[in-house]
Amino acid sequence: MGSGVCVVGSLNVDYVVRADALPGRGETILGESFRTCLGGKGANQAVAAARLGAQVTLLGAVGDDAHGAALREGLAADRIDLRHLRIRKDAPTAVAFITVARGGENMIVVSPGANGTLRPADVESAEESIRNARILVAQLEVPLDAVARAAEIAAEAGVPFLLNAAPARRLDSELLEWVRFLVVNEEEARAVSGRGGERPGRCAEEILDLGASAAVVTLGAEGAIFLDAHGLRRQDAFRVDALDAVGAGDAFVGAFAVALAEGMKVDRALRFACAAGALATTKEGAIPSLPRRPEVDRLCRP
Ligand code: ADP
Image (cartoon, rainbow, N blue to C red):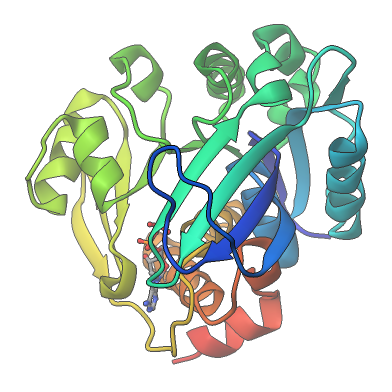
């Protein structure tokens, strides 16, 4: 039996076209390969945690359509508990249209669809799952009032709340005071802290001043830093042959949540999360690149 992770977040279907270059305004170009993949930060992080051995419940919303069915099937295959996944008649499943140019530069339009319909009442009807979890995880691709309600329920029940503040925005102290761990990448750290141009450590200090108990800033190939009232810790990245960074951040968040749910100390949890992030860069895509427990344990071994 794994430890319980409750994720509140988004589910999308991504349409990915590769092309030589990005089209100009009003221009039509011929692309190359095309594929559809399951995504959304909520779905990705739920799968990341499930593949590392946690029992995962995902609270979110999809449309009553083929995309929603594909997501349900894919997530069920990773043994994610979908009993609180809402199926909307009046909103389509979210889709992301992604064009990737040869150099890796991309252009993305997301239609939030059902993700935008998640309400505090949906979260309340899943209250038991939040209260019984070892950790609550959320991101910012679903409405903030739903995230805030989940955070409040978790706080009342003494369940730690990990917020991955992506896409980044300024947040009220009222929400941040419920956050035990705020996890962001370097750019997001600047946006959340309002400290454009500052070093990650300085942004992390500001995030603590704003109310979060601890801040984790992921630094790509430089690893990650962790700051709380006891001070700063740093974890170097694992050396791997990185192929595609997509999914690394979600692998990190899912793994960090699992580590904390299992009661690992912060240093070990950071190492575990960096190993998962590194492994996700060695394969293409988000969900297909999320590693399984034995690989992460192997890489973590001293
Ligand atoms: P995001 O994808 O959200 O921008 P990062 O790029 O910071 O997040 O990646 C998350 C974590 O994944 C990093 O903290 C690091 O541990 C790992 N990681 C990312 N890129 C690499 C890389 N090139 N080599 C090794 N580890 C990496």
